[in-house]
Structure formats: structure tokens, C-alpha cells
Length: 95
Image (cartoon, rainbow, N blue to C red; front, top):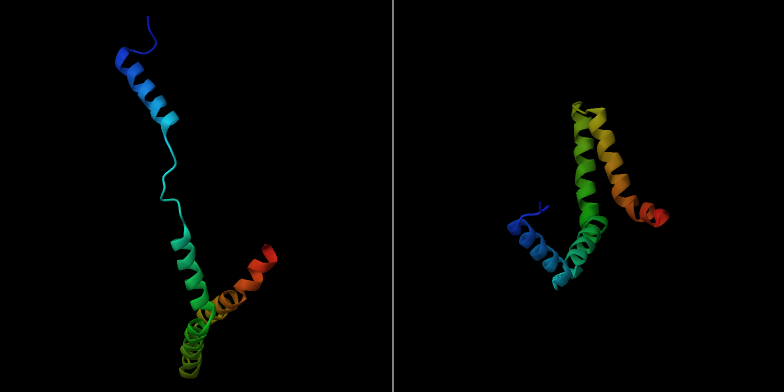
């Protein structure tokens, strides 16, 4: 009694042939992805990021002024800005 029937054996041989004859795809260049993340990182830590941080802190200040501030929200804004602007230093320490 055979372990594999004829169609199953043929399918297994074709799968093995495809696995052996396969070549890597030519679309493995990740430079557009790297460029995107570099641009995003530059924007967030540069002038654009500082402007966004200024608006966020101004919003926190206005909420304090009107007496509607949630302390958890204020701390999350401040902690987020510390992480955003300290990301280069943090990554430099890890690497």
C-alpha cells in the first residue's frame, strides 16, 4: 500500500520543484520605505514637530486657564513630547 496516492505524489513533487527552482523577487529594494521613515522622523523632530508640540502645549495651557484640565491628559502630552524630542538620544543609547 502506497503512502501517497498518485495525485498527492505529483502535487508534492511539483511543490518541491517550485521550492528548489524559486528565485528571490527583484522587488526587495526597501529604499522608498527608508526614505519615507527618514522624512517622517525629520519632520517630527524638526520645525514641524516643534510647531505641533507648541500647539499641544498651548492647548494644555488653555485648558488649565479655563479650569478644565485633566491631569492624565496633561501628563500624557508632556510625556509624549519628551519621548518625541528625546527619541534620537534614546535610540543612540540603545544602538
